[in-house]
Picture 1 (cartoon, one colour):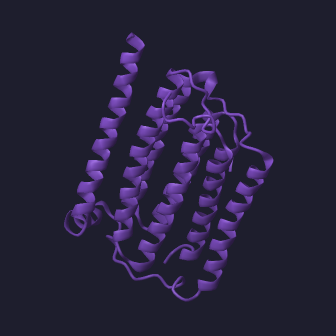
Picture 2 (cartoon, helix red, strand yellow; picture 1 turned 90 degrees about the vertical axis):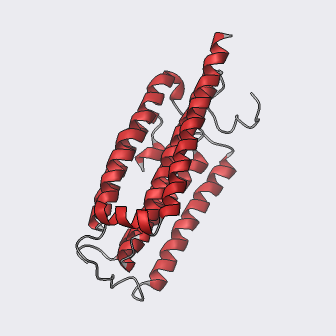
Picture 3 (cartoon, helix red, strand yellow; picture 1 turned 45 degrees about the horizontal axis):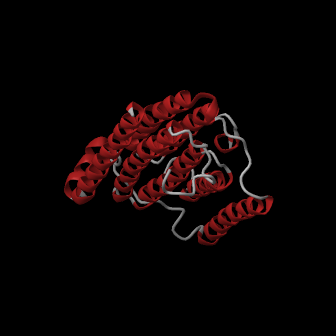
Length: 155
Length: 102
């Protein structure tokens, strides 16, 4: 895949946008309309803009040559990733036909923003609150990282 | 269901996860490692949503949303760390950054 292989992180990030957009289409196929919209807005929009800003800020230093560890480790990483893939596919092939072929019947509103919102605020209220706290902590963490840098620069 | 069986989605997700894992293990630039992490998280999201569709249960989609939020938080922190590393003049290489104090 291009994202992993390109040496210029700018092009890597751009190809990741394509990847995320196609995933959003798959989400639509799985009747998860709200999640597809969120995917496009959160990832392809916000996260990617942030990535591109950082890449632009770092400039030439962001260029990433391929290498990583001794050849033995690299080979081991490839073997491990392939084993992961083969394992999943074999398990899937064994389980195929049991539960995987006939999906449940769903009504038309499945995955719509209204249904998601209702499920979030009734059955999954705790998850909702925890998510908001995680985001808050992340925002505060980002600000802290930023301000300590400013002080160092002044000194 | 219109469209492919759930199994095909799972295979795509497995392939994406493998690619992402490869990226995390092989590359040394923290930027690329973060991008690969995004791929892995999205593969997990795809399986969650596929199974949510399979079982007609909205819980999977809720979980996928939570994963998305966590991924956004992780990217914010990760990019902040990368910028901090760059400002301190450290080499942008995850193998070199092995000490916790600069």
